[in-house]
Length: 100
Image 1 (tube, one colour):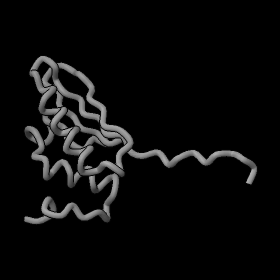
Image 2 (cartoon, helix red, strand yellow; image 1 turned 90 degrees about the horizontal axis):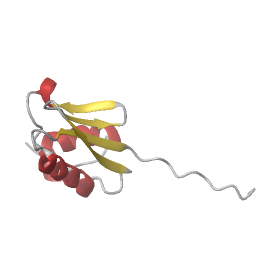
Image 3 (cartoon, rainbow, N blue to C red; image 1 turned 30 degrees about the horizontal axis):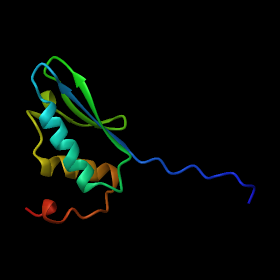
């Protein structure tokens, strides 16, 4: 071995862009907490990004997972976790979240 350290595999970044005018920080922070608790070993970061104009968008890397205006409101945590799981760890069983 030549002494060169291997770069750690980058873990996915989830961003939650929320409207500050609508006071959606608590909703965004709660969803971030849920994602970090469920995917603690699978995510590299969950970022809260302040925005305006009624925005509430959740993205994993460049892919939009949820857009309030396109998806018709806010996600319930079950749907959000399933969409994140499908991108970061598709084979993962979410236990009770996956049950009808």
